Image (cartoon, helix red, strand yellow):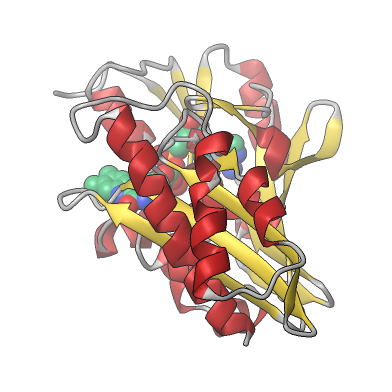
Length: 288
Ligand SMILES: Cc1cc2nc3c(=O)[nH]c(=O)nc-3n(C[C@H](O)[C@H](O)[C@H](O)COP(=O)(O)OP(=O)(O)OC[C@H]3O[C@@H](n4cnc5c(N)ncnc54)[C@H](O)[C@@H]3O)c2cc1C
């Protein structure tokens, strides 16, 4: 199906995009278009105007500064997947980005669009929550930072206001003794996540000093697995500890599980334990 008629504006800067959002009622930002355009074609979204931010140079690219990796919101999945800087500074992001869709999707889709769209089957929201990423936004009232744990509120609902543009995602750089990994059960046709898990562990003196684990695809927003984290902390990360801790994810997925044509809620919960275990096993190996 073709989308409904829509007015098109192209912004050349973040400031202009914010102005255009304010001037045009019922407008939507357009980045790579790989989530918004399909919704418009299905008439599940029919904005009156599109504000194309796809050519704003100031919000593209990756820069590593000390302990922080700053990724512009317009950075594409293929740039994330192939970045040597990111591979060294925050390797879970290229790992997850390389698993997104197919080359066409990765060449057009952006980290900002992926996070703002907040599809529970997307990969980067789960990674952002496990990393404790910070999302930067600019709106009519200026700039603000939102931590990923507060950003994803519900199905396709985020803490961004209608008039705001996401400009960057700040990621903590990997530290000595840390390992990070992403594991997903992918849908064979779209490669969207049916269930996914992201894990970051810090090992000191042979024991887990800190762990951060998030699960995607089961609930309407990424779920932080605090019971899993508690079961890991203070223990040597051997197979037995990881298996016991992974089983605790059942306590973290207490809300309604997504139940659709792809998988039942019960199956997603069962697979959450499996994918948390896989992500933790890889993260622990990488932490050395
Ligand atoms: C066939 C197919 C397979 C896919 N498989 C996967 C997969 O395996 N894993 C996965 O994670 N994703 C997958 N995707 C989704 C893909 O990653 C999208 O590109 C991404 O989710 C949205 O990014 P975009 O740049 O295309 O955003 P757009 O479609 O342009 O926008 C999406 C939403 O974000 C908003 N938005 C965009 N940029 C900004 C910004 N800077 N500030 C504020 N709001 C903004 C838009 O207004 C819109 O509401 C798939 C898509 C397709 C079509």
